[in-house]
Length: 68
Image 1 (cartoon, rainbow, N blue to C red):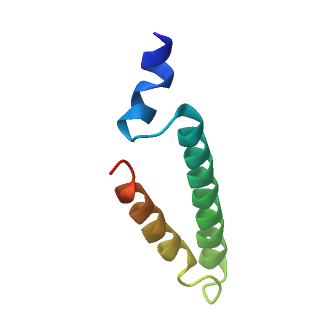
Image 2: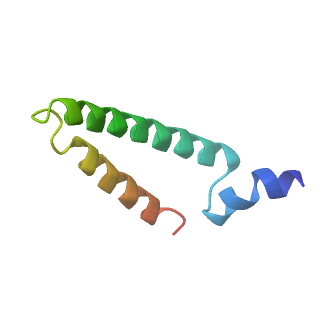
């Protein structure tokens, strides 16, 4: 049961549990930063005009490159 819950998915992307944890935390932090930039941009449109979209593209590229 432990392996199924904590190890199956990380192994499916060729990572250890800790590698997967680090990636997931970094990914979530980057999403929060992008969300903050999008929020500020919504209030003041001249700020962070491309920050969120660039961040999302970079994160998508990171995800597609994993587990190869």
